[in-house]
Image (cartoon, rainbow, N blue to C red; front, side, top):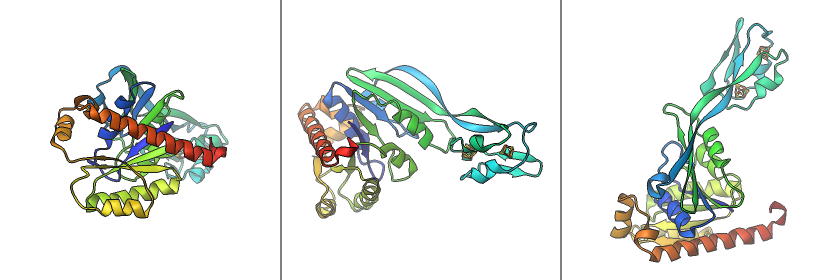
Length: 288
Ligand code: SF4
Ligand code: SF4
């Protein structure tokens, strides 16, 4: 089972939920932090990093000796990343999505692919939790290719938790597309509600079962609750606005460890998600 923990906006407690859930389940768990622009799950899990690799994406390099200036590469590129200009071919690696289309259509075999650095991927362990995250190179604009590489670390025999970037843009979609469940973390404020609606819209478009965790649940107003009821979105957990929870967060600790009663709550959350995923798979057997 692969689930994504997401939120319409930053600062709602998404990483708190993802990391506490991973440690509460204890064994056969994998945590993949796909917030590659600002990964922070490692600050709470404190994994022992055992491997660091440079992640690259393929971009075209032109052999002008072979090139006939036919323009086929320019025609197929959806991203204007390769252009025939006069008697040369220009490439714009920062705009290239690495689809390989130009190499495939070049009739003169004048294009070879070289690697452009996206960032690094680090993997490791913390007790029963396998860990992986990506760190986007400073100045790199394209997060989705690195996110896909982090997602490719998913182990088939584990319960995999993906910590998505905040928001509803392409990196978020790349993090949750094809997963079994999306756990949306929000807070009961007008801002929380606004961003939650955007996130729910994206999850519904992708057709992924989803549920809510409401953080700082006893502050703000009841509009998020009313919206969840209207949209028939189950509220799977509420975390109160509690000084001890905030202190654990600011110290880089996990509440399942500093306040053991939370361990049962997060295990219960896991059981609820598993049940919903199983029910969904039974309802759509062709997908399983
Ligand atoms: S498709 Fe190949 S031969 Fe044609 S312009 Fe592009 S690089 Fe040159
Ligand atoms: S690999 Fe794809 S995106 Fe990149 S230049 Fe070629 S066609 Fe364009």
